[in-house]
Amino acid sequence: MKQFFQFAERQTTYRQEFIGGLTTFLSMAYILVVNPIVLAEAGMDKGAVFTATALSAIIGTLMIGLLANFPIGIAPSMGLNSFFTYSVVIGMGIPWQTALTGVFISGVLFVLLSVLKIREKIIDVIPQDLKYAIASGIGFFVAFIGLKNSGIVQANPATFVSLGNLAAPPTLLAIFCFILTVIFLVKNVRGGIFYGMVIATIIGILFGVIDKPESIVGAIPSLEPTFGVALLQLDQIFTVELLAVVFTFLFVAFFDTAGTLIAVASQAGIMKDNKIPNVGRALLADASASVAGSVLGTSTTASFVESSAGIAAGARTGFSSVVMSGLFVIALFFSPLLAIVTPEVTAPALIIVGALMASEIYHIKWTKLEIAIPAFVTIIMMPLTFSVATGIGLGFVMYPITMLAMKKHKEIHPIIYILAVIFLAYFAFVA
Image 1 (cartoon, rainbow, N blue to C red):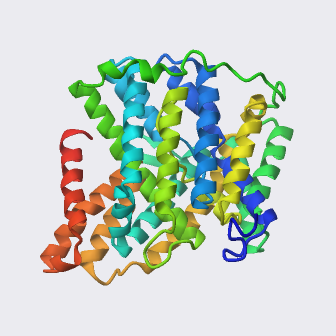
Image 2: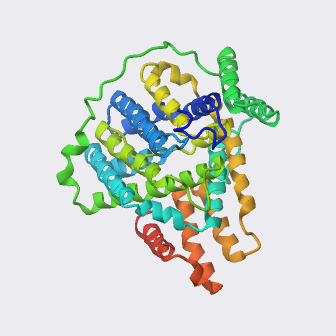
Image 3: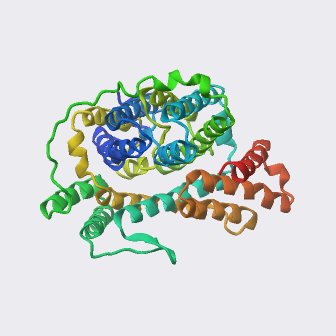
C-alpha cells in the first residue's frame, strides 16, 4: 500500500494521510447539506440530491486517489449548482430534468477531452508565472470565502464589503477557532487544523452556538426521483439556449478544476518542471464523476479547493482521497450528524489555508510588468468576482497583450492565443 501511494517519495505516513483526508472531508462536508438545498429550489427532490451528492463524491474522490494519487476531494461544485438552479432553471425557465441532460453532455465532452489529453496539454502550456498567480489567487479566494462564512466580513451596500459583527456568537467561535489553529500551526502540531475544528465544534455545542444533532443515524434517501432522468431528455439538447448552458458548464468547470489542480499540486510539492504528474488521470476522474453525478441526479462536480486544508494538515497522496471516500460512505448513514459541521467551524481552516497558498505569490517575477500585470489581474479578480475561472480567463486575456507589447511573441504558446480568444468570446456573449 505504501509503495502504491508513494509514501516514501512524498514523505508521509498513514496517520498523516488519515488526518489530512479527515480534515478535507470536514472542510467540504457542507456540500452534503447545501447542495440539496440549492437544487431543491430548482424543483429537485432534496433527499435524492443528498444521496446523489454523496455517491458522486465517493466515485470522483476514489478515482482521483487511485488513478492519479492526488490528495483531492471531488464533489458537486458550489458555483455550478447555483448556476444550475438560479440561471438555468429559474432564470431561463429550463426544466431541471433537461438541465441535468446539459450536465451529462458536458461531462461526456469532458471525458473525451481528457482521454484525448487536450485538457492535459492546456494545463502544461500555461506559463509558470501564471500558474503561481493561479495558485496564490485561489489562496486569496479561499481566504475570502472563509472570512465571509465566519461573518468576519459581510456585504455592505455602500462599500460592497465591510467588517462584520465580531460580537456575534458564531463569529466569536470562528475567531477563537482561528487563533487556536494558528497557535497549533506555529507550534508545528501535526493535524493542527483538524484539532482546531474539533475543539471549536465541542465548544460551540457546549455554549449553544451549534445545535446538538437530533439524532445520529438516518436512513439513506432513495435516488428514484432523480436517477437516470438526464438520459431521458437527450432529444431536447439541440437548442441554442441549452447548447449555451452545456458550453458554460464545460467552460467554467474546466478552468475551476485546472486552477484547483495547479494550486493543490503546487502546495503539496507534486508539481515538477512546471508539469503535474498524472494530471490526465486526475482530469479523467473529475470528468467521470460529472457523468456519474448527472445520471445519479446532481449538478456538475469539480475538484474542491477545500482540499488544500487537508494538504496543510499533512495529506500528500491519494490515500487521503481513499479516506475521504470512506468518510462520504459513512456520511450516507450519519446525515443528521453533519449538521454540526457549520461554516463557522470550517471557515478558520479556509482562512489559514488561503494564507499558506498565497505564499506562491513570492515566485512571480514582479519586476517584469508584462508578467506582473496579468498575474495581478488573475489574483485580484478571483476573490472580487467570486470565480476561479473568471480570474484565470482575465489573466489569459492580459498575458498575450502584455507579452506582444514587449515583442516577446515567441515565448507565447499558440494555445494561449486560442484560449485568450475563447475567453474574450465567453465574457462578451455568455458571462
